Image (cartoon, rainbow, N blue to C red; front, side, top):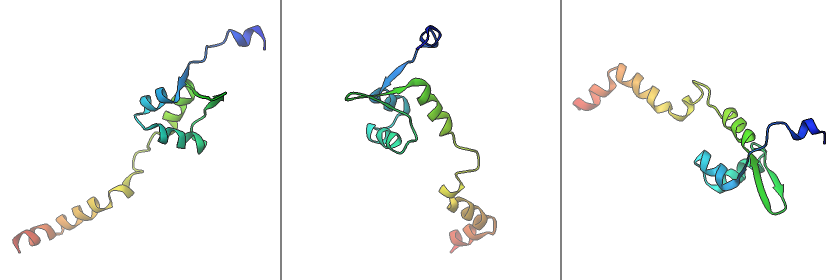
Length: 94
């Protein structure tokens, strides 16, 4: 290791508990992300640590693109179309 490498930006390590708190997820979910290869982690003996910079990259990579969640609320589109066609007024009158 050269002297220049040792003087580079220091690494900030997070425990799995700290990382899960930052993400507001359970430890189990965090371990799933690690096991799936979505989040980089390091094992030092029996201890697992995550670089803060890797956690930040994971967060940015998990960003949701606008318009990509329509599959989660398809009934809303159908309801609007039904209401526009006068379907709700008919149901309310009958």
